[in-house]
Image 1 (cartoon, rainbow, N blue to C red):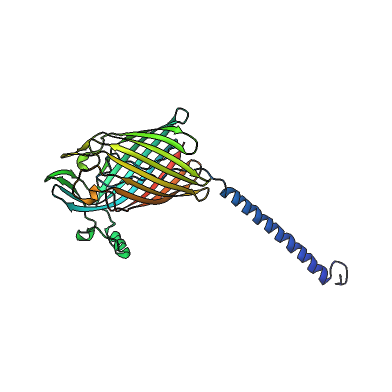
Image 2: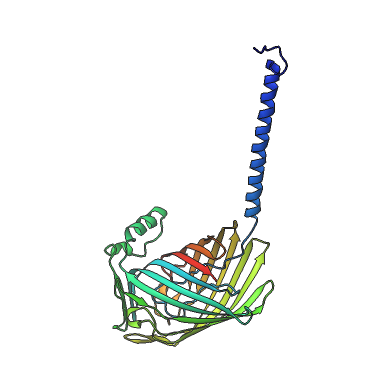
Length: 349
């Protein structure tokens, strides 16, 4: 039988052994924590690159098929995008010549395909919009939202909630009569982008042709061929911030629906900032402005410039796939929906 007085079995020695074992265990834990932290920091510092501006288009029903420009990157890419935009619009107003009656929600699915050619200096793009106007379900929420923050409701409370209305008349003759719940193809757009300067800032020129594939009588198109041209600039600020600047013009012939209406060419501009928050998440802020293609209707919400402020970002699943989210507000209460919410999926190839 061993005695405590024997070497290695005194209370002092046992305490020392326990302390050594504890120190070794703590050291292993500390090393593991350091390695995990180092791995995390290394991963967090591995930026996968900028994704470009958010895919946000002005979903105002009357402007939707008249060129419908948006902020885009000067740099081309090979990608397929599926973008879903949901918006709410209320405009009930009458002037001497015009009557605009819009109380609706719009769901728009954009299928966008981009492909690089000629050493990545030229990008061809195809945009196929699918549109559905409907009575919606958001009137109660919007009434509470406007009331809570003291925002005007544009007279929405004067109409029955979630009741569909889409009719535009000129001099007593109907121009557009929308149909609730119908799903239809909009005007298909083909674009070409050519790089002019590929350093910093990255500069390109962009042109597009929008074909009259949508039914103008239902508000899905304008019945004419529209073209556009724009100058695009990407300017980096450090390693994690990219700015996007667009300025352009849309050339349109008219609105040929139940009644033919002459339209005006208009200018547009946009600015955006993308911040690489981490290797998987980028955050965006964008501002878009466009003139009105309609001529002096006498209704402010149609005649004045449209301005849209957007916030959102992208979550990168991996190098090829990412998810997009956005929320946009009509800051000038003219020429744009009351709000727009967007979701999207991108695949790079």
